[in-house]
Length: 203
Image (cartoon, rainbow, N blue to C red; front, side, top):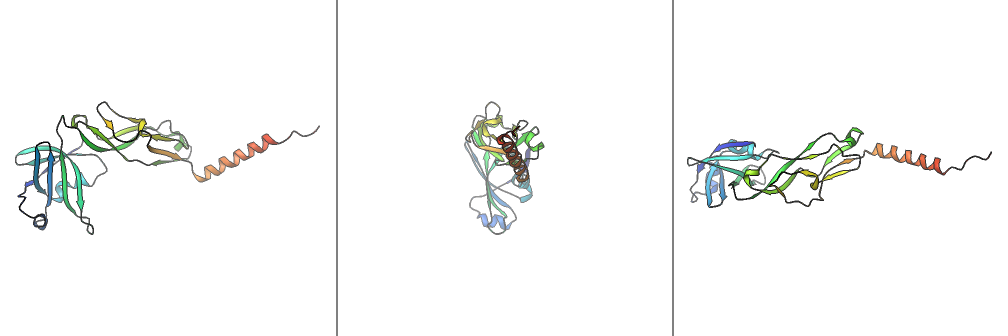
């Protein structure tokens, strides 16, 4: 599990968020079972947690105590895209959480070898689990994925304790047949039909 450790400064809720931003810091909150901590962080503190396609766990050092958490929500400025506020969700064993895990492929698709293009329609899958069962990513085997075929959520390799929150029939990826290949197949099929329908020559 990838973990990013960062330090935070406790925040007086009476201090306006705007004043915290003027100091070059970002207002944040950590919430969970019996926890509701307000603090601030710097952009460098959390950029590796926010700007990544990977799933990462945060470990915030606050008031001498370390808390495992995940980024739950990020508010960006509508014009500058600067981070204005971050919500962190506390991870506590025994309390299930919902997270989105990246989907990665295993194997090589025969359809791709034949000239098809692998089109991924779902890059993350929402799951529900206990923090002790957390993984970085979910895998799906594409070694039998042929031209025109697709793999679905039901094909994911899911460990015990992980509950998938997406309809199992939802497509994850497919192998698209290139236009040139479609034309070649159509031409070949047309030739075969013509040959099959031709009458034998009279003797």
